[in-house]
View 1 (cartoon, rainbow, N blue to C red):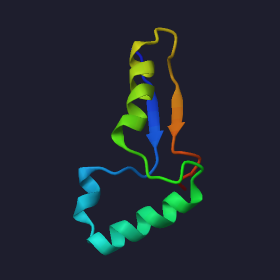
View 2 (cartoon, rainbow, N blue to C red; view 1 turned 180 degrees about the vertical axis):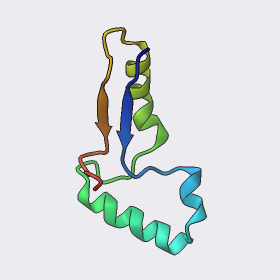
View 3 (cartoon, helix red, strand yellow; view 1 turned 45 degrees about the horizontal axis):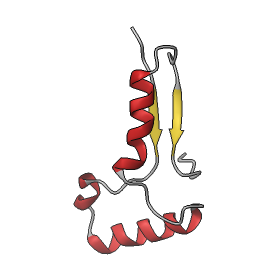
View 4 (cartoon, helix red, strand yellow; view 1 turned 120 degrees about the vertical axis):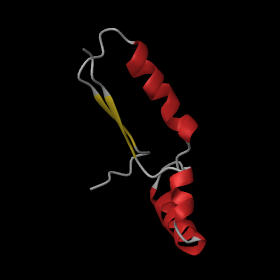
Length: 73
């Protein structure tokens, strides 16, 4: 059995749409200011890591941080 994980930072996902829009936009803006990319992560930003972990035979027990350099507590 192989178990790998990708720990992701704040992303624009449908789950975020449950937040009030003003709060969501404020959180996105303040987070984006801290990131070197100056933007919030999208699903496509994590897909390459997921594909790598799923297809690399010798990647076992790996945790890959995908957060744009924004460490989440």
